[in-house]
Length: 160
Image (cartoon, rainbow, N blue to C red; front, side, top):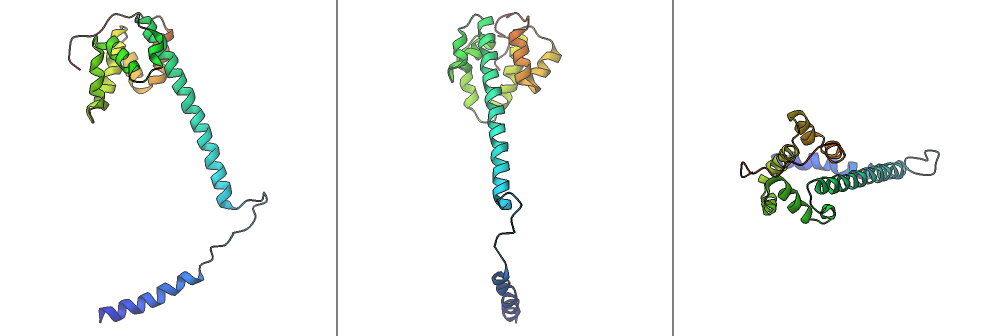
């Protein structure tokens, strides 16, 4: 009984797919369909987003270069992947090899926040500045780099 009802419903629904029009919905006055306009808009947004990310990345490298220089480390370490993290952990903890803990899933998120807190402490910054460093990292890294902050030394009072 249920099979006959199901087959009757399917016979009513399946032919509806033959009546759907997949054609063009008209010209919008500039030669493109709605899909082409949407693709062009998304591509434009993506290009602007990529430029924004590139600018933030370049500003980050500049900030870390200056921070490394303030901590009496070679500034060019900011450009080299993994070496920049080693140098940053060396500045913060006095032991650069602790950056390998960033490879541990779950711990890396906590360690990234702790790293920014310790960086603020290494430059003798206030709690408000450290909160800004955690939530608005690129801006406060630039303030730390180009401000009058002096490097105090590595923070060795705890493991993480």
